[in-house]
Image 1: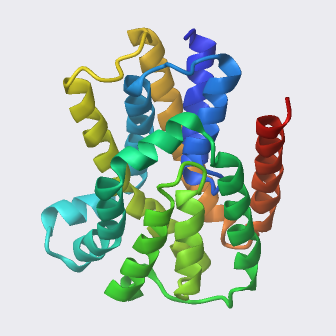
Image 2: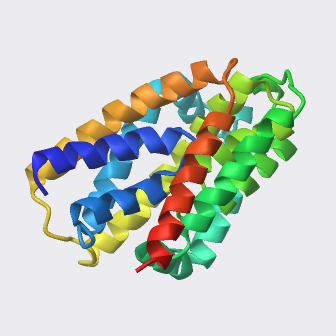
Image 3: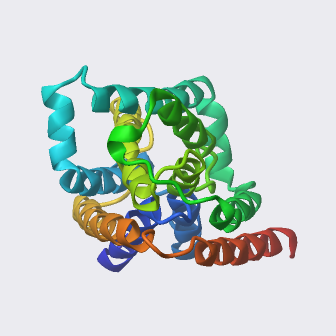
Amino acid sequence: MDWIEAILLGLVQGLTEFLPISSTGHLYLGRELIGLKEAGLFLDTMLHLGTLIAVIVVYKNELWTVIKKPFGRLSLILIVGTIPAVAVGLLFKDYFEGISKTGSTIGWEFLITGFILWFSDRIKKGAKKLQDISYGDALFIGSFQAVAIFPAISRSGLTIVAGLFRKLDREVAAYFSFLLSVPVIGGAVLLQLVDLLQGKGLGEVTGSALLIATIASALAGFIAVKWMISYLKKGSLKWFAVYVWTLGLSVLLMQNVG
């Protein structure tokens, strides 16, 4: 992997992790396009580390509050919201890793993501702020996050829409979605590190390429978080729906023709 490919994959990961269009699905397609099918788990880990750094920088004040008050209300709603994804991820880890490697379902998953995003504009606007989020709200949103373990189901898209269903203010829905990503991305990085320590998935990517990819992922992720929170104040998710529909249909066409 040269530095141009490293930057490309870093930008793809950083942007699509927080835009409602699925980072895992885009990374799979990105690797296919540039011929990095066997890039290794280490690359995945560093790309996710980049987005983790980005969201930690954005939410440094909130995360410092969590550290200072581990049993405070913000900490508890994050824990409740994370439980469904942890349970599903641990119970079905091998299954999801299998379908992520083959990419056999991503076309349909892009289409499903699109339908969810398209109909989100029909949800009546709510006014709940961050301090108004209940444990029930957190569990509901977290359950949608668990569904997004499928490769091309957008985690940010589903959790934002789930927040809108629970009458969160549009900006707050995005805000909480990204805050909720911290334990999930952090947990994924830790699990990947365990596999790496066991000698799995090292791949053949140079250290300099990994560093470039990580930095690109962090910078793109920071921009995406900031932009998406601002965009959702008035912007529609329908445009993202059109994009993932187009992508999903293109993937299905390529998979079933020739």
